[in-house]
Image 1: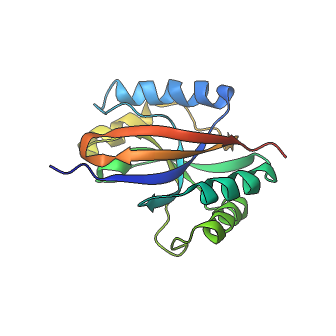
Image 2: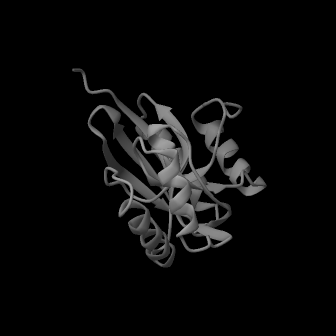
Image 3: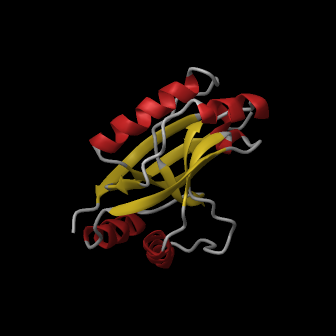
Length: 171
């Protein structure tokens, strides 16, 4: 088997948000088996590779960006490995603008079916289990803050995710 590595940009959360999201994720994963992964929102990808110029331009772009607030729409699920159970996120103007600016650095298809979400569980699970789980979870905070952007190497063949570099949104 050939290990296929790709790269994505993830939005990461400040410690207070991580604590809140971990509490929910742990409740979800106590009922639904899942591989371990860092809590995140996928912003762009896959990229087959990247170079130092892209990283420099990305760092420069992000230095002029403030943290953004994501607008959560609640829990949802699909019958897809990486969208098995998640918090659905509204594709807000701030999120669209950030993605558009990143696209200018390294082109990707902005019009592709982007479905922003924060995964709480990966895997193949019964719909009935997921529906029952929603009724036993706390209400989702409406605003969830993104304070960093990370460049992540992903090998889906072996469920391995590794942050290569991260950049604070500080402006």
